Image (cartoon, rainbow, N blue to C red):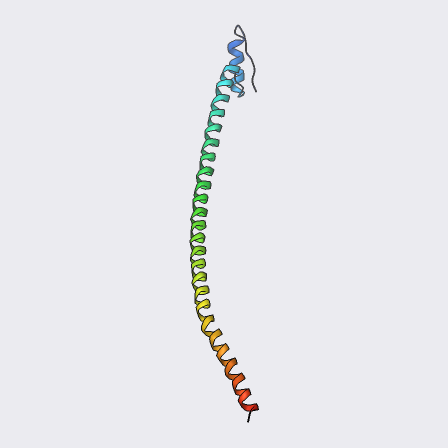
Length: 115
């Protein structure tokens, strides 16, 4: 509690009584309030800096994960492209063989009918 004291005959006695009860004059309490506020602000600043550092570390970790996933995705696309090219190359001989087989089958049927 803050109590304003007046100087004079009762001033000294009042200050002694108030200080013994844990009550300070307004100038003393103002200084203490400022000190407490500064200490509180310093603690809040330290807490904010700690949270900011943790957030920055998490961001860096997430960026590393994203970079790795992007590289994995790029590698998968390249592998898919190569596989598609191999499939295209394999389809051509298969189509040619299928056409030859169909032609041979028709020729065999014709030969069978003409007998």
